[in-house]
Image 1 (cartoon, rainbow, N blue to C red):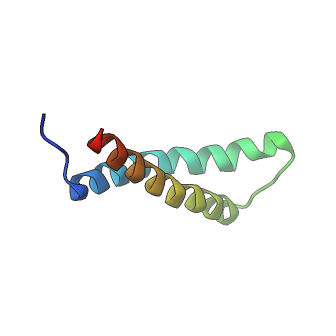
Image 2 (tube, rainbow, N blue to C red; image 1 turned 180 degrees about the vertical axis):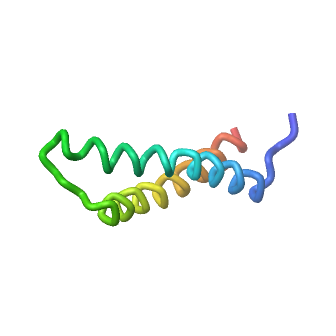
Length: 69
């Protein structure tokens, strides 16, 4: 089995994260009011952006880890 390149790992992690980005923003904006929080669309975007960056880093690191196992 061929080992995935670092560039392809990064592309896969970004694709996965961008797909989740829209879902995450909608969930943040629509679900937080259920917990008594009222984020503005911009607040929801900032919260989502923080999780987005963490998701990219996590996904890339895990992909690289599993590629050497």
